[in-house]
Image (cartoon, rainbow, N blue to C red; front, top):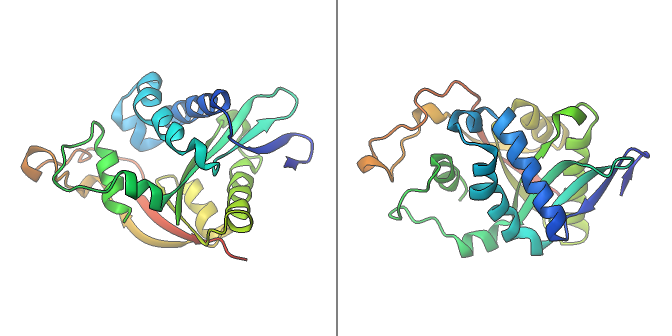
Amino acid sequence: MADSDEYTYEIIDNESDARDCAQLLAEEFVLHNSIDIYHRMSIQQYYDILMWPMLKEVLNERLSFLSRHQSSGEIVGVILAGDMYLHQQKHPYEPNSPPQWIPLDDLLDEMAHEFISLGATRVSHSGKGIATKLRKTLYNYARDIRNFQYAFVQVNSEATRHIYLNILQGKELTVVNPTTWLWKKKDNGLFYPYKDYKGELISNILIKVTK
């Protein structure tokens, strides 16, 4: 699918593109996402521990999309998506399991009880509607081709929250302030890993993708 002649929008369907997309996600999250900046992780750590394993797991579901700059061939935007039912079958939330390496993973697992998505756009290509078009492309495909009815997202960016609530008409289900979140799996449930966090809140948003 093309947006004028500048960008195309494609399903991520091969490992080479998937690795490039995971690298983009790692770079943009580590450099520009407030809660990931708080973690003080390197881009390579974020790629190895989070983004590549996550994208690799959902690659065969063929629900994730990329945006490619037509003239350069550079991947400039990614929306990663997977079937939540399959994810929860593979990784059910276990309150008594050991804590994950990054507390945010346990926080998001506690919050997420059709399919789930996360995305990023190169800052150098921001302001051109790529993030909105990627999400609309994904949701139209999920509805028309794969027969999904709802999408569930977790966001802590006000710009992304605006897209989901005001453009895609999503419904905000819950909002969590990371500074008050108690990491139940760490230090006998007495640890607040984000007590000094100064960034944005985390929202659970449900989007109805039917026409």
